[in-house]
Image (cartoon, rainbow, N blue to C red; front, side, top):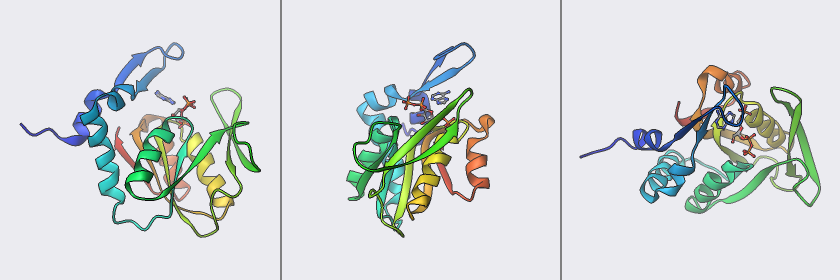
Length: 177
Ligand code: PRP
Ligand code: ADE
């Protein structure tokens, strides 16, 4: 019997209550990756969306955006560049700060990771407040890139991140809510 690919991904996402702290339900994608058919179905959703799009590069966000982003880059025959948490990249970097529930965090990219005018797809696993994705998009724009879309597996719409990104002019694609 036929199974809807989006539903197959949704069914494999594990919700872990009270992690990493009380009141947070963590949406764990490791079972999606662990099952070979579900992993393939997930990647095919992204591949079909972007196979006819003019893209130059995939930018994946530390850490789970690396997994989806690098598979997608390989499949679309594109290069991959990492958007990393502070202090991980060895060469000359540009940083963008963003606010967490308490305190600040920042993401970094190598200054030579993109060339001005390149059409970049930004990829992560999940959009919550949208702070991480927005900071990454700003970094890419500061480097002169054209952020074609922000793509992720999961959107948590009640946290307002996808709305915030769209208000800031980004196109957003997510596989499920
Ligand atoms: C998670 C997730 C996104 C981000 C989304 O990563 O993978 O990158 O949070 O949250 P936001 O929309 O509120 O910014 P996390 O910061 O937990 O880091 P990790 O990849 O190192 O686990
Ligand atoms: N990042 C921010 N909120 C998250 C959640 N609820 N599950 C997984 N990753 C997250």
